[in-house]
Length: 186
Image (cartoon, rainbow, N blue to C red; front, side, top):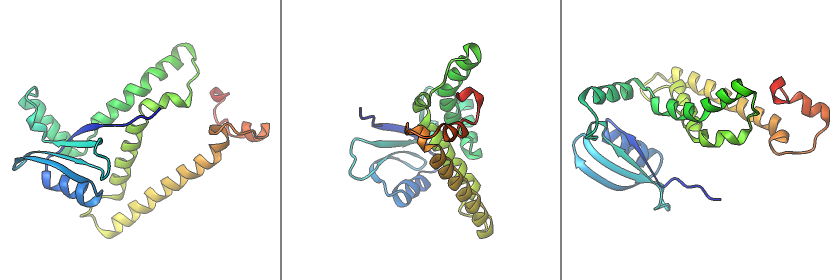
């Protein structure tokens, strides 16, 4: 089964900065740039994948949003608040926490498939915050890079340690038991 994302929409408050990031940094191609000034709808996508695109839209352009809601969206974007990611992750995770607490239902790794993309995006954004903005001092960015790198190395080491369990490999019972960190995993 192939799962693809054909289109996604993200708000932007600076079309030129968005273009600089998606086109110049990520290497995406610009497929459409409609509007003028701050009210621009920009469609970008990875080269060679015409069926996948991201629409970068101004948050003030939604006709169903009130002025107060527009101000809130702009404030959230300015503060770096990623409420959408939080809600998407919670929507996938919280029901299973409720099931576990309610009737001790076993939770399997594949349940995370529904919100795993949001977790990956959230972790990436957090690492960006740890590294710091481009205008930060070189020392600040170096420290953030060391912390982010240490986190990624710890994640890779944890994955390597748990890989025999995730891959269903046959291992000695003592090795299997050492990887069961919580009693509820057994």
